[in-house]
Length: 90
Picture (cartoon, rainbow, N blue to C red):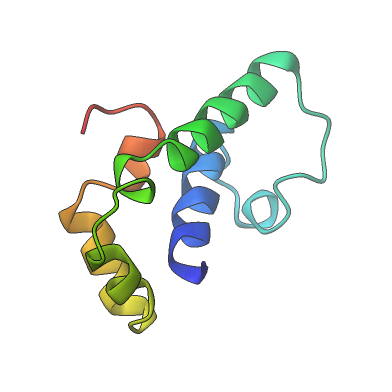
């Protein structure tokens, strides 16, 4: 969870166009307009619809029990990146 939650956080910060360190520290401490909320919904939907979550293979179960850096590397190799969450094709 720690590995994919960091990806999701980075994608949401990018979707909200937050560059200031203080704004990035508290991204939801502001009013969000419909466009921003729709962007967040799309980002979360891409994460939950990622093809490997529903893959019946046992590889993902083994990887998810590894340490965080190995999980993040496995995600990268299987195209679960911030870019993918922002809408880039996999």
